[in-house]
Each structure stands twice: as structure tokens, then as C-alpha cells.
Length: 125
Image (tube, rainbow, N blue to C red; front, side, top):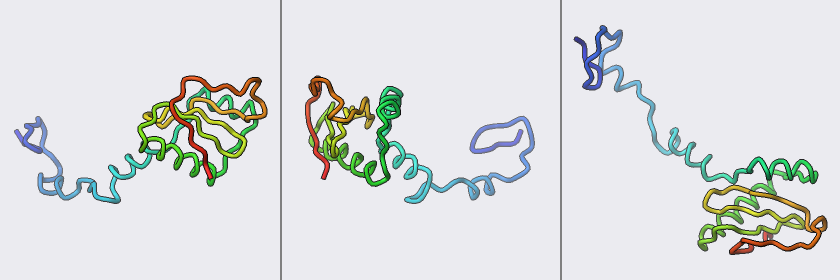
């Protein structure tokens, strides 16, 4: 039987083991690993937060998303778990370890403007 990467296979490979080794995807600084890590580090929105953004007519620009990302990174550096991020007149509750926005609201819309179960507040500039 033929062998590929140390595994015996019940067929004859079309390419040699050397050709398989040469054609493997490289995982350097510009490879899959770095792109995957970059995507994991981005702020995500829960389905609840997405519904709230739509219902409350809150639209975020790329600049605002960058500010939100920066705020979450700063909260993470300080060891925050659940943070209130204030950006202009919009409040975001973010689960920092998961980098996930849980809900969002305009401050004027809040009936009592009370935020519970948070351990930090980040003001964006």
C-alpha cells in the first residue's frame, strides 16, 4: 500500500509525498492563523443586541466600530468582565471576555438610565 504523511492508504496517490509537502498552506504572518485571530479579536453583536440596534435605529459607522473595538480592548486590559461603553449618547453593554455587545440603547430612551451587573465603564473619545 502507498503511504501519505505516514498513513497507509488503499490507493495510489497521483502526487508524491514531496509534492504534498510543498503544496501545503503556509501559516506565516499573512497566513490563515493571523486572519483567524484577527477575526476572533473583533467585537461581535449578540442577536439581542442586533435586534435592539435595528429597533432603536442605531447605526454605527466604521469609525464608531473602531472606537467600540478600542474601548473593549482597553476594558480587557484592565480585567473587566461586563462593561458599559459610552459612545456619544449611545450606551453599549459588552461582555468583555467574549468581545460581544449584549445590548445597546440611546441614553435619552432609557426610562431610568440604570445599568446593573457591570463592573466597569469606558467612555470613548
